[in-house]
Image (tube, rainbow over all chains, first blue to last red; front, side, top):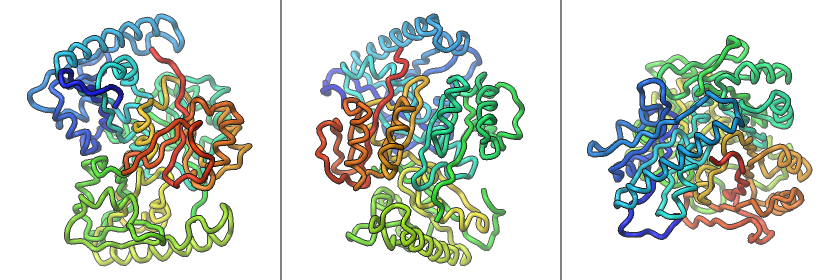
Length: 250
Length: 250
């Protein structure tokens, strides 16, 4: 895909494993993972679980494999834009790309698990930019977490000629309001500690009544409720707020 | 999901079949389709093919089934907002919902094929709004056409804190420019006869160099090229223009 195939090196697979439900992998993702003796995945340092992408993929992984856990050195310890975050993460991606390259050089295929779709706000792209110029690379698109969330909320997100805007909760409140005023439908990602700010910005735009809060869409303990009924506290990272469009209904 | 299950009626399934490649259906979509003795799908009147959703799903459909082709009475004969379009389409959706309801009443499950994701600009939602209050309804999310397009272009669409805006090509040029100025990354859908207008609006915003044209992503005869190299003509309906974000790369 990105580099000429070389019989002696392995292929880098960026595999979208969908939103969390093992049944929401594509047939292609399942086929590709079976060809990967090395499975790489991102996880956070705290907790003892291998993360949501791994949990979704696990039933489909080959029995004979080696797991390469890529453990984020930091997650939310520094504010957005803090140079220490960027430094730590750049060194981390550099290291992990090196470990994956060593496997590819040894002729082994590496499957990098990506929650949702690999090219939609995924960590995989940091590996992709480093390795795809040098190794054959195949990316398998996946069902996004936001699709699982609006499905969980049982509501279409966009109709007809609606503009749909995906807004990271990390933006400041004024920018969020500007973006909201210029769209018909919206999805807020990356809530976490940003949740109270996002909630207030949506209220300021008079859109609270249309907003739905979805936690862990297509995962265990999924929760769906009107935004108006949520408490003004920190939300999990995998929480999303959706504001469905009101476009043409025929 | 939307109505209490009733042992005597069938279940309405809205099944996302992904962007066109039969391997990009989810395991859940494949399992669900096998339980549907009636398969409903939208297609246009012209041509003799059953459309892209049907082609993607066909290898997975049960041998013993009845196909219910829902043939759009109009597609692009009227300009956007023309009352005749809305009238014809409303009557059409009403009729088709009635035909599906008759199957459900007879105790048969009906699988409605939806290209991409059923709740993301899909025709399924017009059936969904009419029938889900009355029949048990299950929606299966799918890989969107836009995911297939940025995968085909081998480029991440959004990074870090990028705002991503999905813009229907049906909007007027000034609105398109406003939306483009307020976003980091963009996806243009519904090109067709709108393509020259969209192309000119992107040029007016100085974004042509970053834009990529993708035709029939994840389908046969897929084409990818820089927008700057396209001819200023009508594009197929399944063409998309993407402008990838330039957010945080670590």
